[in-house]
Amino acid sequence: MLNVGKGRRDLIIALGGRTISRFGDGVALVALTLRLQADGAHPYEIALLLGGGVVPQLLLVRAIGRLVDTQDSRRLLVAGGLVEVAATIPLIFLHSVVPIILLVAVLGAATMLTGATWAALIPRVVGEDHVAEAVSAQQSLNVIALVGAPAIGGLLAGAFGTGLPMALDAATYVVVTVAAVLIRTRRRPAPTATEGKQASARSGYAILRADTVLAPLLSGVAFVVLLTGMVDVVLVYLVRATLHGGGVWYGVTEASWMAGMVGGALGAGRIVSERGRVRATIGGIALICAGIAAFAVAPGVAILIPLSILGGVGNGYALTSVSTLLLMRTPDAARGRVSAAANAILGGAQGASLLAGGLVATVLSPREIYALGGLLGLAATGLLVARVGLSREEEPEVGLEPTT
Image (cartoon, rainbow, N blue to C red):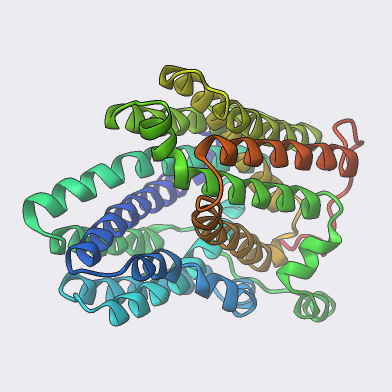
C-alpha cells in the first residue's frame, strides 16, 4: 500500500468504492446488451446503448468541470451517487429501448461528475508526491474489475435474468456513495478574487490547449484509443476466420491484453520524474501500435498472446503516465475542468472508434485493418517525438498557481 500516512484510510475507501462501482458498470453493460438483443433490438440500437453514456461527456464537459472546481467534493460525490442509484433502479425492470438509452445518458452525466470529482480529490487525499502511485493503483484495479465484469454479467443474466445484474449495479452505486460520505478529506475550492477571475475565463479545453506537453500527449493517446477500438471490432474475425482459432483463443487474447495493462500501470506508478512520464507515454503508444501492426502479419493464433501482452503493457504505461501528468501539471483549482475535458476527449475517441471500426470493416480485411491501425499509430508516435521530444528538459507547470 502507498506510504501516504493519514491519507491511507481515505485512499483505501476511495479506491475500493470506485473499483466496485466500475465492476458494477461492466456487469450492467453486458446485461443491458443481452436484454436488448433478446428483445429484438436492431444493431443501431445496441450502438446507441453503447454510445449513450458518452454523449453527456461531450455536451456537459464545461458545466461539470465548473461544478467540480467550485463546489464541495463530498456534496458532489453524494449527489452524483444518488442520481446514479435513482437512474439504475428503473433499469432493473425496463425493456423499452428509448427510456433505457435515456437513463444510460443520465448515468453517463452522473458518472462524469463523480469521476472528475474523484480525480480532483485524489491529490488532496495522498499528497502531491504520491499522485503517480495512486493513479497507478486505480488504473490497475479498474482493469482487474473490467476483466471479470463481462463474464459475471453474462453468467448472472443467463442464470437469473438481466434484472439481477442491474440490481447489483445499483448496489455498487450505493457502496461508492457511502464511500464518499466516509472519506474525511474534502476539496472545497476557494480561490482568491484574482484566481477566480482567471479560472472562470478558462475552460478545461483551453487549459489543455495551452499546455505544450499535455496537448500533444493527450491528442496522441486519444488517437491510439480510436485505433485500438477500431481494431477491437475485428479481433474476433482475425482470430476465428483468418487464423482459424476458437472462442477460447479469442478470450485468452483479450485477457492477455488486460494482464499486460495491469503490469504497465504498476510499472508507470514507479516513475518519479515528469520527463520519465512523458517518455513512458510516448513509449507506451509505440508499444501499442507495434503490437497492433504485428497482429497483421501473425502466422498463427498463438503469437497473438505475447503480442497482446506487449500492447497491454504499452497501454498501461501510456494511460497511467498521461493521467498522472494531467493531475501533476494542472493546478488544484483547475483539476475538475481539466479532468472533465480529458475524459470527454478520450470518451469521444472511444465512441468514435466503434463507428470507425464498423465502417472500415466493410472495405478492408482484418489483417489490413490491423496493418492500417498499427502504421498510423507508429506515424503518430513519430510526430509526438518531434513535437514533444524524449529528451526535453523539465518544464514548470502551467496555468494557475496551486491553492492551499
